[in-house]
Figure 1 (cartoon, rainbow, N blue to C red):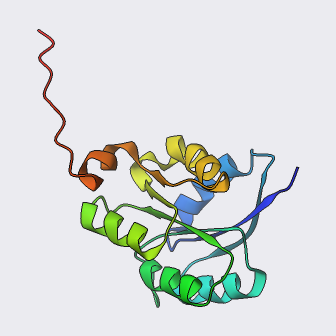
Figure 2 (figure 1 turned 60 degrees about the vertical axis):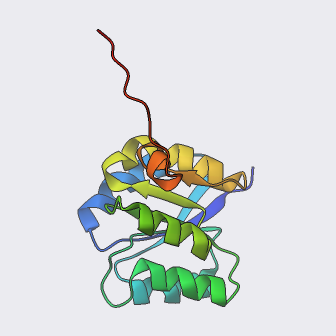
Amino acid sequence: MKKNSIVFADDHVQFLQGIIPIITKRDDIEIMEQAHDGMEAINIIRLIKPDIAVLDIQMPKINGFNVAQMIIREKLPTKIIFLTMYDDASLVKKGFELGIKGYVLKENAFSEIDNCLETVIAGGYYVSPQLASALFNITLPKIDVT
């Protein structure tokens, strides 16, 4: 089984310490490096060309959007997933228009990261379910359960 190489970039060390053990349980994933700011992230990604980069949007030095733009502009073979606290539909849309493959909210990361990685590895796109209605401008009907 081919292992997919991953680089994580997030300036919240405690968050990384919590999410990485979840990822390393997968047989098809190998975490290559961790970066704590955007400059470090793009330098690592340029050097090792991982299959996937999991980026926070808000990072010191260079934000996740700028790192993603560099990856895409330089035609690096790395699929991009944003793992962020920002639940703004305009940021989600901007990310997918840019070329990212996944958008996961940190508040749901521990329960969603496996599904996201599996979907992105298979060539699909993933967005946190709670953002789907906002992303597609869908108004969900209110259901009266009484």
